[in-house]
Length: 429
Image (tube, rainbow, N blue to C red; front, side, top):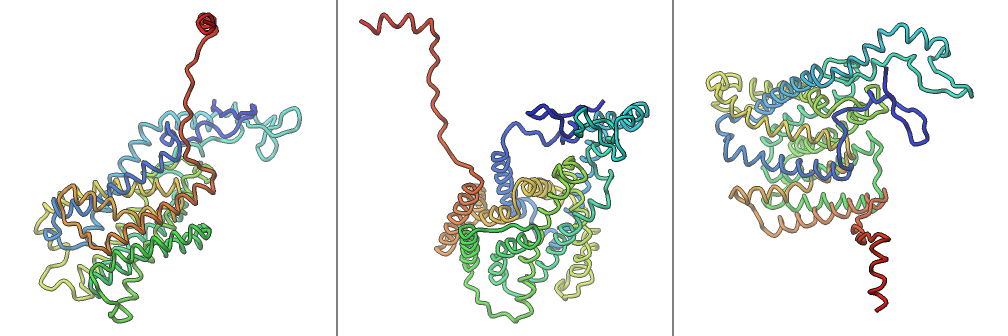
């Protein structure tokens, strides 16, 4: 029989089977967000270290093809993890669901007390939870499980946009100097806030809006370090502006997907994990990035390859490159699963703020590995403004939801009655 969770008032709510067994954490949501943010900063900071110290870009100078291959590798690995979870960890849940599904005698007994809508009623005429409905909807989700088309509908926007962003970013780098490209990239939080507002309905108050603008302005100061002027033609500027716009859309649509698929109100009843959602997202992203790679680094529609062969020819000549790509894919796996988890815990704007602050941990990681760190006044001023704005935004949001940082109250030592009686004569002396 299905186990149901008992509420504080004694009533029964959703079955225990509807609860995701991998989503039970021994600490609060605040600490989960903090852990996810730390993982985000660490993983995104290790990517340039890996590229410079372990896998040099000169080994395989095809960034879009590299992204497509790595995303495909990560998606395949996550698919295997989801399949193993379904076959091993989810077996007890499938057994309970099958018992409910095939229990004809249980359904026959329930039919005598249930109405046409399958709702049981107690003696007072009030609806109560009963076994009339089949519990197959409570089997934990997996990559090839139920509601597959609904999953694709929810994940397709972020999956396709994420792969397209790789192609547009690489295209833009060939049209303008690097400084101009980075300067326009610094506006990504602005587009994230706008996308989160129109797609997810996320509203920012005056303080939060000011903090977001401060973060954008700080990022622009960091982007000005190369002293590049915005003297490029209109078309190259528009192409490079598409990259941060696509990034904002990716973050907002990822948050939308987590709300549709990972909350208990959705058709999957909160049983989809970050691993499965990321798997679906990345094979769509890999296909999208592969299409861009064929156009840019294969057919060479922008005439940027020069004497280099198409990416597939270069890969066939040096298949050992796949080992280096697999090493980088491990970092991509951690980053992608974590950003999905973070998006399920907080808002798209919060993810954008976290992304804006990444410049500080990147500097620290570079110092740790003795890589070059550019600490001119513009960089320092921009980083300080980004940090101050992020703290202001976080404080304002925390205040709105009633979250307060308080010192733990000091506990007085417990003294028993017997001990008090023994000390009384001493106090009277």
